[in-house]
Length: 224
Ligand SMILES: [Zn+2]
Ligand SMILES: [Zn+2]
Image (cartoon, rainbow, N blue to C red; front, side):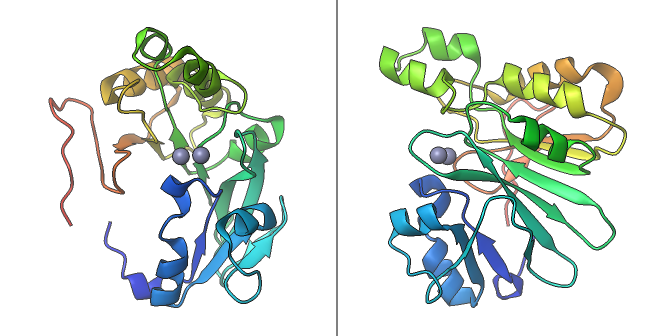
């Protein structure tokens, strides 16, 4: 994806966990972009509201420009006030980014249906997690209400909201220990049966690059 950093108007941080927040303040200063987060996240990051970031409420429509508005939707995630985000453009087309949640809420499902693009986590394969190396307490946390979505949960949710309007799907935040791209992709595609006709990609956890997994033997990084 070729985006000129100086063209980024706003950076929305969903929650304070470092894999989502670490360089956001520096980036917003370097690129002169507005930093957006809710108050809990700002407090946990030590950001000064007004001076360093603009805070939002859940379900508040944030107007970023004439063309883009964002809607933060609260989601359950341990020890964090996390949000999923729906971006809308002037034509009523919508794109969603949904990561770090133990389960999907009714509100979120309602906003996901009719989206043209969805980037959603498929964090773990249930049996890989349960048979894997993590301690029991961590297995319970990841699979609990405040943990992450499994391939099965993501597939079931998508099978409920999939329509011909869904053009592209990116599976993200895959666990390196407890998942594999081919497992995530096949479980999600199977759940949607033949009702999904768009494109599907996998975003690697270690970076923003993503590749289309289908038919490839190795995850291929798109070099920038
Ligand atoms: Zn998190
Ligand atoms: Zn995360």
